[in-house]
Length: 112
Image (tube, rainbow, N blue to C red):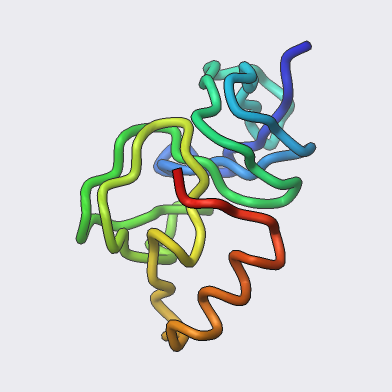
């Protein structure tokens, strides 16, 4: 069964998972008007409410959501991967490594 995510703005390079997604699942990317705009295959587990990359995002490039640069990639992110504190740094808050590791442990993330 295909999963769903939402892309809020045409400029966005990430979408938000509308349900928990497992590695290898196909994700329908919907607009805020519920129009299907593309499909992406998940490269890893993505929890409900978290961001996934809609295209490859190079290290030091911006992560764009709602048409706004919300973070900067700290390493290369592949299309279909989880975008979170382990591979992107917020434009608003800088997290210490200890907090970053704790956040990733809470969602059960294991580096591939």
